[in-house]
Image (tube, rainbow, N blue to C red; front, side):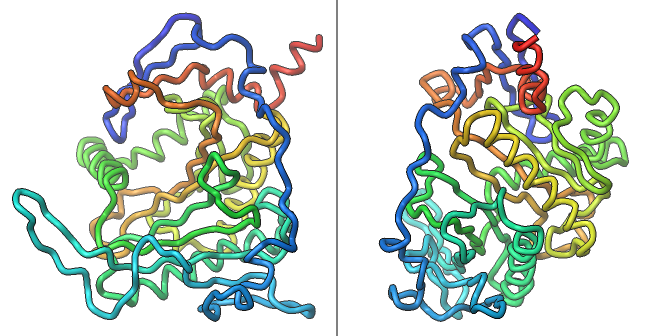
Length: 336
């Protein structure tokens, strides 16, 4: 692909510009600085309770002690209380109290991020996500549960020690709402899952597939908003992350780890975010059309005036080329 092209996301309806001529060379997306390792001695997560954190709401241990702790965030976005958030109006504005849960999932090893966790530990992180989802669902005030990981300062991680976050919300977030609306509209029109259609299209074409195993697939979306954006899907249709069976989850975790390792190797260890998009925790009969998945966004670009002023993202890397580079195809061609 040489010329710029508008592409419309079949779920959200958003337009994206793929503009590969604006990129110079692939090397411009390599991480420019080596990751700065922070000493254990100054880390507040080496001994969470000694550093003033509450006792864990969930933990896993081995013969040496704890290996995963789930603790309430010491500085939460939303504060938990027994009563649901109250709605009110301030002039023409609607207002709701910031009530919810905000947990942190901490893994024991200070220097081992998700890509390098053992199979057992990586799956335990996702098991902790699922267990906390089920626990939070018992709170009648909760409508949606957001799970994500920030890796590196430019991705919003203020603490080096690998950790993951879970927030329960009294609302359905805007991006999720639009995704649900687009999924429902496609299902009403075709009788099919929109994300299953994407997975089928990518598996047939193979150009943008980065990794695949028996139950999961990783690809650079045809409508990628950011350079080297990736998505991880279970191949089978599951609306709800928390209800996905253990065997399938094992393959999804494997796919996520492989994807993050490829980013680390091919882009020289960039900062990134990954987050889970799943159907809302309430009214489950309404969302059978949805297909949960994981989105990975490496921090390789900065939104500027056009993107901020129009809401149209400009991606300067053709997703076909991004996938080839992450697979190692591009580097092989350069060496030939």
